[in-house]
Image (cartoon, rainbow, N blue to C red):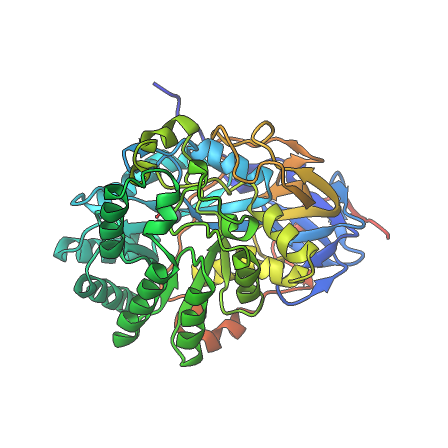
Length: 503
Ligand code: URP
Ligand code: ZN
Ligand code: ZN
């Protein structure tokens, strides 16, 4: 029997957790300032210059570097049973890898079995996650079937368990039909939740798979052939049309094509609340149809211009969020489909490398600036899932989830050095500018001058309340204006040895 991990409340942790980050370029979604950051008890207590801070505080010099809000990866699948296999990164190894790459919070998906109580499945995921996570985490809940019990349990999850987002599938054996999607969206709207959609036309994919296998196309190239771009776009459009009928906000997961992006652009331009997310793999790579290890759904497209187009959509706010869709299966598990591409477990890595890949392809290439990088890797997810400004920004009173990012250093991504459990890396050999030299998770230095020092169980479950203003009442987002300068009011006075550190 394993010993349960005792969580030390942040306020009881020692003075080693007093930190001053000096001389860095502090990046938020809307500006870059040259401020120092004082952290205590896991929270940003002061922001500004010439801060008065207690003696004994550790000082980290961030001169020449950016200080970014920790990444929020809103799309992971740790230790998930899927397509007859179980993903190999668990909540420990997955969050450890996340932190190594500069991500300080993940949101995973509870995957109930078809017919299972979604509440029971949620409890199981809390049990899997709570004692293992190295950083904070939240949970979306997938709806793999639909009935009155599911509706009642959605309400319980929203009202009592801090869940505000539900995923539906338009493909796979557990896809919902249009009438069920309508009911889910309507229920989400009534609860103030966000409906997330895996948008692909499952009926067409099933017929295409049958046809391709009958023609003798059994290799990995059959995957993208069976789910071409228009099969995704049709589902994105249908999801938008259904959501519009009941005035429900929706969030399209893993937008992989410009065509899908344009459908979202049109819906948004007509005033519909639709958000779009892009997978790091779809930004970092051109799909190789012969490579089973790259198989995920919707597919990483083999069209060479796609990554550039997706970045353009992220840059112009047609799409708002990047996730990893980290769902890792080892080579031996991918082999399950060696005679039939439709049996290759779908999923790729990305939780560790998302920040670097987006920086390299987005900021280093000049397509987006550091502020937009922060928006699409952290702030927008925090706003949509209603944890802003506690997360997703550097402000007085926010959680001290920070990354000191050296844009001049490079690293080469490799399975031989990554921290994930999976035995290959889809980004193998990619050289990325931007290295997370320090990663601070709830005030604790978990990457210290490049050295990874995570603690299993250090993270907590973070409730995501319903009725996010960003989603349901965008005008109110201004009321949440984070404090960008000054001092957090409580208890600085309790420290007797105050010193001022001069510039
Ligand atoms: O292919 C993928 N993305 N696997 C994980 C499950 C899902 O649909 O997100
Ligand atoms: Zn999906
Ligand atoms: Zn996914």
